[in-house]
Image (cartoon, rainbow, N blue to C red; front, side):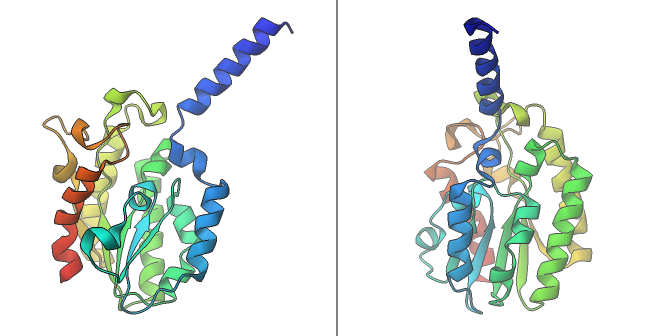
Length: 223
């Protein structure tokens, strides 16, 4: 095989990696392991308000944003629903007063169906309720994305999957005993995409977006 063909194959491989979300690539990297091991030793207790999720949760200093030292960030870049299930024990063992859960977009990038993702999320919900029945559980909708940035090709044309997951999550709230929080209008533009002013890659959020998120969640955090 000549040098040109080798370079061509390498270019294709790199292009394939570049179309994978940073979350998906980070799922089991050193950073994931570092953060997971940290969460295994950091305390959660009955006064804790836990924010549980992936990079969207990981990307904010929630306790500073709310001015509340009881808030614990348990987000990890790249996490999926099954990943959260795997690391759930240190969270629920402390019987926190509240859990705010956001997960699913990385599962979409792995080409899972809306039905399968919701099934896994309901399993996660059941596990939380079983382990800590007194904890108030808030399930947040998947946030809109903006594919005009061209960054995450594995999320291209996946907007209908996001909408279907959110529809099912909203429909299951009463039966499954969680509070449903629809974040869509907080972050969406007139076309239903993630507002371009709130992101620099079409998926992850800039500071002003977290201010909007704080204002949306503040009544739930305070109640």
